[in-house]
Image 1 (tube, one colour):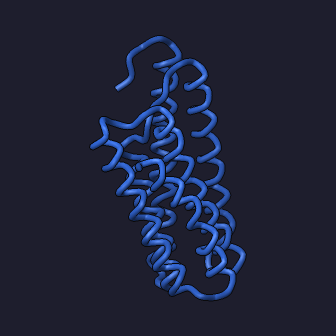
Image 2 (cartoon, one colour):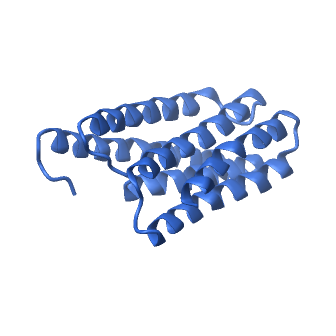
Length: 169
């Protein structure tokens, strides 16, 4: 069930992006909130089912990346967001994905950290406010970039500890 919710978050990106590109920002807000709720629900469901499996630990962050970066790219296309913050987030996301892949190939799979979860929440809020036309959305987007890079540093430390054979937090 948790993985179903995660796949749903990936699929809902299509109508969200279509809504943005067609100027239907109200529809995009509603669908984005729905997608964000699936992120909240899938985590709770996974924990109730005995904790996240390795597949879910890899799929959930991937779904978040697809969700956030697709929507932000559409917002760049319609002029609601500049390209620099989106490029910065893309660089961070690809770097974290690379670390996760390296770690998984070495037999260690780590899920999202608390900072990673805060980053995702801040991104979701930024997107909703940007879609709704509120300037605070841009501030939240830059805040999410700050949190993103701090959490990247955290992931890098976890990876380096695990690859050196040390226990990570």
